[in-house]
Length: 307
Image 1 (cartoon, helix red, strand yellow):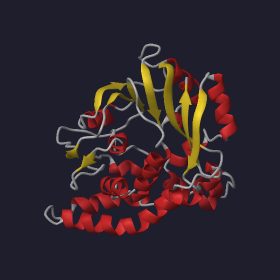
Image 2 (cartoon, one colour):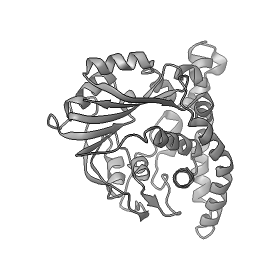
Image 3 (spheres, helix red, strand yellow):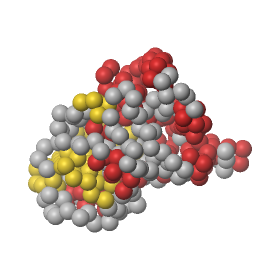
Image 4 (cartoon, helix red, strand yellow):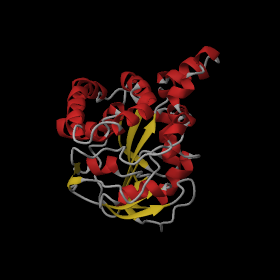
């Protein structure tokens, strides 16, 4: 636990709630291995899969190295969708394997992913559209973004099309308990109480968008059955405590935190960051242990599917 969680806390030090979430995702998918030609569907900047594969960064690296449009943060702009030639992944050690294809719809994030030298190829495309891959192209596929797309059932069928017979797909999908764990959804969307409208600034379209695709295990299994995929493993993670910790977290203060970091003397920064990460571990470690419990009330499913 310690090394992966510490690496995530170092990379996401200004967003420690994200580090805990990502750690629990990694724990949930322990039974999944990439075999044959592999696809990371919705790879983003590649950092999650890189760390999951055993890759490590130097202490100086973080996920916030290249951000922009912070003044539009509260208009739900993706401030991480930025890149220029100054971006340096600062890899300390290579992962234990590579993934054949990283697929995403944002060119800037794919440029960051390419800098990791982790994906043999990156492909830009719309996950809502037919995939630019032949039938039976991949032996293994991972995705934790299917629930962000317009029609997850169609996307899952498309992923099955490009999977070889006997191949495996690992998916992270929201459970139907997620809506009640969202402050924005439970206090404002459900009640229409205008006193809670300010929670839109907290949510920023994150849990509210995910909630649209929240489904019970039974409902997800019906979708898999229609796609002619069988469930070889199922677990649940991210209980209420973790979701609500993430829901608040450091996210609302991110633009201000970035400006503070930019104002710190460069020579002092390593010591400040080390102290910050050590303090975070006191809280993140017990939270991560709490969140690893497999419980049917937990907010996310992890499925391993077979064709």
